[in-house]
Length: 286
Length: 80
Image (cartoon, rainbow over all chains, first blue to last red; front, side):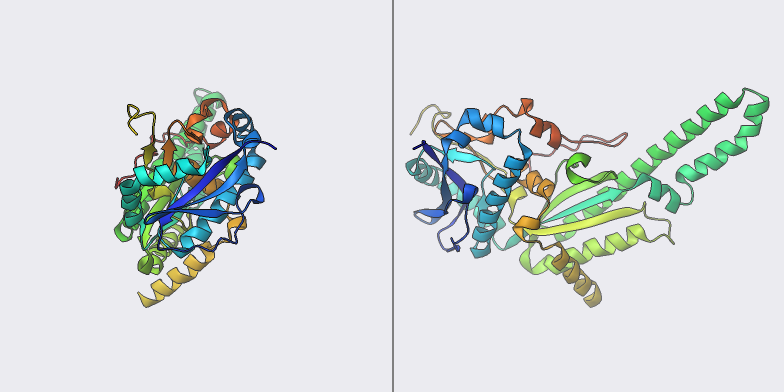
């Protein structure tokens, strides 16, 4: 019999009563720990995987991380269906239920503040990509234009400084165009982020995703998360759709050939990123 | 506007995925940079693990195109 810990998924107001048929990490049943008007959703995990040392090793295994992440998400989704939810960061493990109760007691007001911010709101994700090749073709200038102008200069290069110079000039023009394209795309992403902020209650930009994980080679110019009132979801999505159309309309030449993706609704992961210290780091006051 | 909203609703519906079909990369954005972080003596959190050394950290490290500016807003939501 291996030692066990308590894996914490989310904290909600007691009013919600989530369906607990959903299984947690490693297929373990999920249970609710209620303290006053708050409730924590937890399951038991073995410390031979969730202890500090094994965990440091297992976190290198993307398959393992993926399994845990999906299980965590599954529980958070089920809980968020029932009411305002504060998801907890991936892999938060307590030594026992008593410590979870203590957390709810000690951080009661902080949790209530977080929950009241996200109540009646959902998170949406908006990602924007620019394919440098397609964008330059679409703009009718860009890299192709650079090639053309470089070619025009080429005869002079041939009679004068030789083909090497022409090649370098062409390379320079290409590079210059890529930088222009990047700036253009970034400016569009800023406009998109601002436009979505008009409909959303709050917005936050995550780091651009690694192409190795996303499987997309284009430039990711926006990886945004937006907290939106539930009754404005369609309006928010319409704003995304309108931008997507404007950005891909080749006729106007206004857009940089941007691909805009909407994901969600998510539990409000990106808007509950608050750090709560428990005992031991506050001068030992209990 | 009605048409726009309807189109929006369709798009919103497309974005709705069951948990097992959500892209892991989108999930990790949220699970590793979002959510309540609890630290302290009797809790083990991912914040306690030395993430600097692990490959996952390398995988999720930001990638930037040419001339990109730092837009690090992690841990600091604009509304907080």
